[in-house]
Amino acid sequence: MANDLSFRPKTGEIPTDPGVYRWLDETGRVLYVGKAKNLRARLSNYFGPLESLHERTRRMVTSAVDVQWTIVKSEYEALQLEFTWIKEYDPPFNVQFKDDKSYPYLAVSTGDSYPRAFITRNRGLKGVKYFGPYTQAWAVRETLDTLLKVYPVRSCSSGVFNRAQSSGRACLLGDIGKCAAPCVGRVTSTEHKAIAKQFIDFMGGGDTEHVETLRSRMLEASEAQQYELAGRLRDNVEALETILEKSTIVLSDNTDADLFGIADDELAAAVSQFIVRGGRIRGVRGWVVDKELERDLSELVEYVLQNVYSPTDGAEPQEVPREVIVPALPDDSKELSRWLGELRGSKVDLRVAQRGDKAALADTALTNAKHALMLYKTRRSADFTARADALAGIQSALNLAEAPLRIECFDVSHLGGTGVVASMVVFEDGLPKKDHYRRFSIEETTDDTESIYQVMSRRLKYLKDPASDAELIDPGKFSYRPSLLIVDGGLPQVNAAQRAINDSGVGGLTVVGLAKRLEEVWLPGDEFPIILPRATDELFLLQRIRDEAHRFAISYQRKKRSSSIASVLGEIPGLGEKRISALLRRFGSAKRLKVASVDEISEVAGIGYSLAVQIIEGLKK
Image 1 (cartoon, one colour):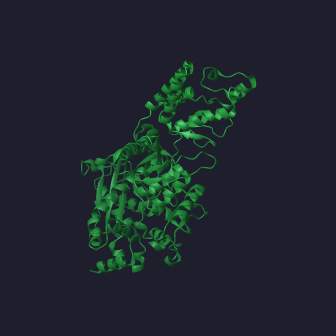
Image 2: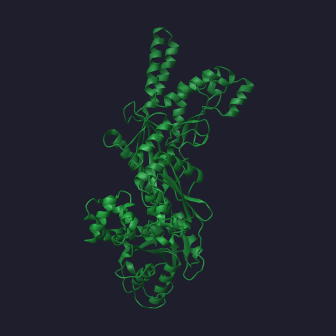
Image 3: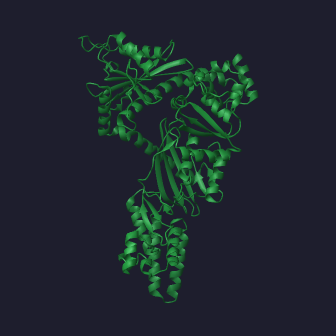
């Protein structure tokens, strides 16, 4: 199957140096950008048996027509070049981030001659310092209103400011003391910038120091019998303390850290970021990540940090704190920490919290991420209107007489042609009906199309033609008549399914195939597929049903094969779970391992030459 990729370079042509690689399609578009400390070892994983690859990885490599690489001197240079190219090319198979512009920020336009404090949901503005994000708009408005009593920085728009300059009359905020009124010359530009700096310093984390400074000035004014000034300073102290009371103290006063929680499944991941400055939670941020390719937690961490801290042209970058606490460390954590340190200008501690208050707060971030992922997965499917639109869209696209209220989807899973199993998942009214799910074990088969034929035949024997008066063979759940049948695959698979329907004698059934490569919908016998528009409810529902069938099948297949394959490899000294998993991803089965050479086995990450020899000797026993 690996030979199906005609552009595969010879193993000896791929360098063993660190580097960055790009997969390209026939138009030259960059599909995916990745990095590796050993290009040969990493790329060899992509060129293994296609059936052993994750479904979305398989879709990426079969959509490509070329792979190119660039050698660099170190893993750190590879990290930097990867980040640069991802920003430049925006590859569709790299991790895709959903924007979180719905969060309000407190911002100060430091690039203006007269800095302005304002509330915005856009983090892309140039010359702006951001604080937050805040989870509630009223909270940031209340914070700004209170701070203006202490630090009366300009908060009006450019139009209001220019009109006040022209007329020589300050606005209401200037009259009530919530603006220093630089527009009419009550303070100079330098003095106003100093006020803005105090505003920024307080929001940046030096809060308790500011309170103590104001309190000391209050006492000095009182002793000097300047009671009016002492009263104003007292009010300022109370205002700042009110703000601090609403910022939860979670860690020690000198703690500046960002804590990340990540929850993921096969298709997406949700990220929750807690921004802690001066030991207090200054902001909470959350967003969703689309996973086009299979990514483990450590890889997701790397992409999340890149997205959060990577500088954006013209816009104020996200502040890098002294500590960045993540749920798992990437393999190149040292290089990543160095990159963060260069952005910050000093050392950054990138680590996993093991115990104490930071670990507890990281658990809270994870809880928030899990909840966000659950909401993301269920929001569209739980919405009645979206489900109705999806079913109506499927009805229209497939020219069905009625909306498909009961959909059954079938997927076949195996590893190198062994341990063949299949799944049937059921969705009614656009929602999963898990008590109707079924699993199939296939003892003998020649290929995927034969497997589909067998499974469909076994399922259809429980149905009778509705045109006849015959009773259902089984009055149980398995006998409910589907409105639409889906098979995971293209034209060969859907033709096999239609052949099973014809041979069963059951009429009035519609079957389609959903191909993973380009998400095409195939009808039996048709030369060309149906292409549903991207981001539509109908395609989202079909993808969700297909991926649920795949998940259900692969979990059953893994359960069946774990004892057989893992037991063979597990008896070889020096092989643990990680190395066995790496070998299975590369070769697909113990059978393929037996015919592999020492050099091919030693190309797998974590497997050296001597261990490769042991593996070959162990498999011969």
